[in-house]
Structure formats: C-alpha cells, structure tokens
Image (cartoon, helix red, strand yellow):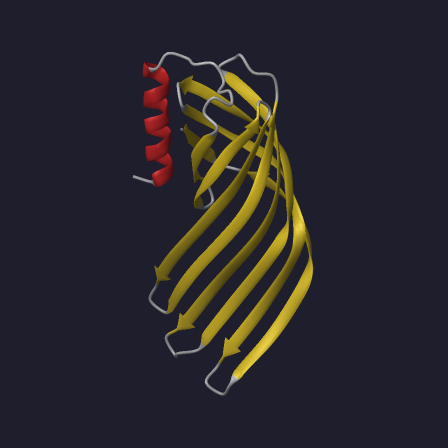
Length: 189
C-alpha cells in the first residue's frame, strides 16, 4: 500500500471520528508538519502572532530502479524556509497565503550493462507563492495543503562516462511551474 494512501486513510479515519475543533490560536505556538506528495517531508513551525506562522520545511527522496539493462539511482533534497499568513479564525477551517524561498539539489545516476554511466545533477533555487486551507478536525491537529506557483533558476549538469573519460555539459536557466503541496498534517504543541 502506498504511503499516500495510508496517510489519506488515517486522516479520513480521524476526520470521521473526531469532533470539529476551532482553528488553532497562538496558545499552541509550535507545530511539526508531515507532508506526503511528490516527496516526503517534514517541517518545524512557530506561530509568531495570531495570523502569522514561520517555518522550515525539509523534503527528501531516494529511489533505486533496476531493469534488465539499466540501473538508476535518483535522489533529491530541499530546504525551504516559509511563512503562512492566515485568514480569519474561529471556524474549523482556516485559509492562508503561503510564501517561501527554497534551495534544492537532485541527482540521477544511470548505469547500463556495458558499464557506461550518465549522471545528471540539478540545483534549483527560487521562491514560491500560493494559497491553502487547514482544517482542524481535533484539538492540536490540522490537515491541509496549498497550491500556487514556483519560480527560480536551475542549473543542470550532464556528466557522461563512456570508459574513455568524463564529458560534461551544463545548462542554466529560469523556470516557472505550478505547485501542489500534497497532504500536510500539523501536530501542534
């Protein structure tokens, strides 16, 4: 069973068995966020006022794929300081605006049966803006997510080793794309 399905099932079970709670106020200023989406991540958050939270999000993934004639290792790591500006409170759900800056490093190494190796290294940095919603089904827990846009600069390095020596190509440039956070669960303390 996939991690996303397990998280969705657990969240749904909690939502249907819990009495709704009103949106969290600064009485519980800290939270740990768990995220399941394109990558798995977690964050440490602090409410610095009734409508403002600051946090540090970390995400990582590592995959290894093996086939008959190709072996691949894929990994990525992202560091993302972020802020949330919340809308009105007093309801079980609370909207927010999201802003962040990020730095991401990813690599993919492919080796074929002849031993030729290709490595791709991608470094990205930039910012994200979006809007989201958090639902507080029970005291000290919220479930939510956000959508938005992400823009920045990307550097991609292609490294080829064909047994005769390494060759490297680099490409730099801007990027702009949409963003979906995946499911986020915050535990407040």
